[in-house]
Image (cartoon, rainbow, N blue to C red):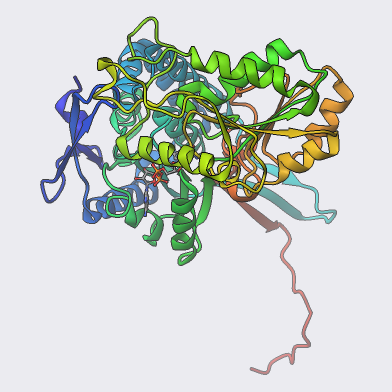
Length: 499
Ligand code: TXE
C-alpha cells in the first residue's frame, strides 16, 4: 500500500490535495482490487505546477548547479532505485498487472537510464569555434531548454518517465509530469527519490488525472518550453497541434505497427521462439511489438503452425502466479478494443489460428485477460494489418522476394521498429538499411540500450529519446560571438559631425 503523501500532487516541493478535492481510485487490472486513491488534478492545479517549474527554472538555485553536481544527483537516484527496487517493482506490477519478474526487469532498465544520463550531465561542455579571424572568440554554449511538460502512458510507466526525466535533469531543465491516470504510482514514488537525491523543490512536479483536464494546460501554457509525449497517435496529434500555438518544441513517441520479417534461410527455431516474444510480451502492450509477421512463402506453414500451437499454450495469470507467462490487459476498455479489432479482422477475411477469445476460468472473471491471438492470411490492405491493436494479436502475411518483404515492411504510416531473420548477413544488412523504422533488430527482438537513440520515422513520432539525440532534445544551442577588438564596421557611409 502506498503512503498517503505519494497519492497527492507534488507542486513546488509540497504534497497537496487537488484544489477541488477530486480523487480517482486505481484498481488492479487482473483482479479488480483497489490499489490506491489519487488526487485528481484540475487544470488550475496543473497551471500551478507549471508556474512552480517556471519559478524554479528562472529564479531557483537549480540553475547554479554544475553538470558534475547534476550528474551526482542522477547517480544517487539510480542508487536509491537499486535500494528500493522491490518497492518500485511491486507498485509497477500493481498498477499495470505486469508480472513481477517483468516489473523487476523494467526497474533495472530505469536504473540504467539514470546511470547513463548521469555520465552525460558531465559531458555538456562549451565548444570553441575557430572562425578564422583574429580577435574573435566564438563559443557554442548548450543550455537547458527550460520547462518541460511530460505526458506518459500506462504500458511502461516508470521506464517511459525515466526516458524523459533523466535527460531533462541532466541538462538542467525543470518539469511537470502527468503520468497516465491508470498508472501513476511509480512515477509519484520517483518524485520522493529525486527529492532524497537532492533535486531542489519546484524542479520536479507531478499532477495526476485525466488527459484533457489535468493534462490540458501542459501543451498550451505559454510558460512551457517543450512537451514530451508518449502515447497514442490521436492524442499525439492533438498535443502537437496545441503546442504549435506557442511554438513549443515537441518530442512525440506514438507507437508503431512493426514488421517482423522471417526469411526461409533463417534459424527458424530461434525466429519462431522470438516471434512469440516479439508480439506477446506484456500482452502486446508494447509500442515496438512485432505485431506484423512477414514470412517467406516456402516456410509459412512450418512457421505459422508452430507459432499458433505455442500461442495456444501460453499460460495467463496474475503477477505473482509462478506458472503464468503473461498477464491481463490494462483496462476493460482496452480489452474491448482489442476484441473488436480481432472480430473485425476475421470479418475482413483473416483466418483465426489461435486465441481470439477471453480465457475461461474463475481466476479471470475480475480481470481484463485476452488469449494470445494469431490471424493468418492477412493482406496489407486490411485494417488489422495497418492499425495498432496494442494487444496480444499477431497478423501474418506472406512474401516471395526480398524486395517484396521490404515493400511490405514499409507499407505503414508508422516507422518505429522492425526485425529481420536470416542467416545471410549481407541480405540482413541490405534489408535493415531499406526499412524506414527507427530501430531494426537482426536475428533478435526487443533489446535496447540507453546509449542508442529510440524513436520513430513517419507517424511514429517526432524526435528521439535516449542516446545523444535524446539528450539534445532538452538543450538549446547558443552561439556567443565575442569581438575582443571592437572597431567600426564602416558598412554605411557616415557624415562626420551630422546627426
Ligand atoms: O493513450 P493516450 P490511450 C496507443 C495504443 C492505445 C492507444 C490509446 O494503440 O490503444 O494509444 O491509448 C494523456 N492532453 N498507445 O488512450 O490517450 C493520457 O492521460 C494531454 C501507444 O491510453 O494517448 C495519458 O497520460 N494529455 C503508446 C497519455 O496521454 C492527454 C502507449 C497517453 O494516453 C490528453 C500507450 C490531452 N488532451 C498507448 N489526452 C506508446 N507509444 O507506447 C490524453 N492524454
